[in-house]
Length: 218
Image (cartoon, rainbow, N blue to C red; front, side, top):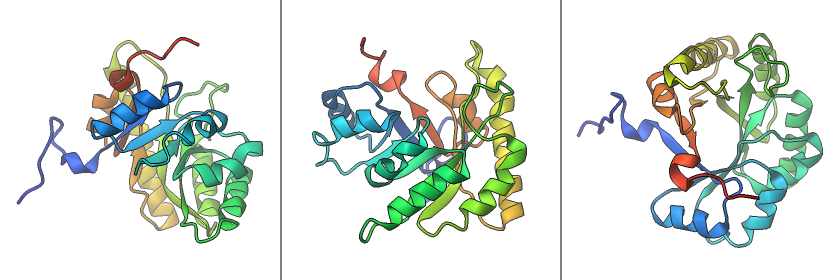
């Protein structure tokens, strides 16, 4: 039987939906899980530490999608199934060491966060520096380099974000050739632009508001 194709002409099983659950209470996360969601994204180590105890019974995959400070890398290595925002070799080395100290732990999946716009204040590595970083990350035995992630600028017209998504896909393809290994994951697209991201090759989309509604007031 041929794979079921979705709205964008790609098999639906090629695309993973990550529910961005930052600032959401455990009750909302549990409700999403009961509705069928299995992948969740958190922004901060400390926030996830506070929610984790109430959700440990869920057979879900937990991703760190926010920027990770080096001094929290050791904690993150034991809390998440994937760190999707690695943009520095020193940070990756800390994750690698900490993961290696965990008994019988599988490799920690990581993604390289790429800065696809010129704004210096944004996190992520510059595209021209990604190849050198990818080669070094591929040498770390306790980490699994799986692909790339980006956060493009927020634009009112999602179609205008397309060049950023295309740039990440083309960079991924180039890196895979340069380092001689597959990089199957492209994490790009959020609530307002995930449809365009899927058209441009996203394999993971990070959706918060469209699943959970507006963030709770602090």
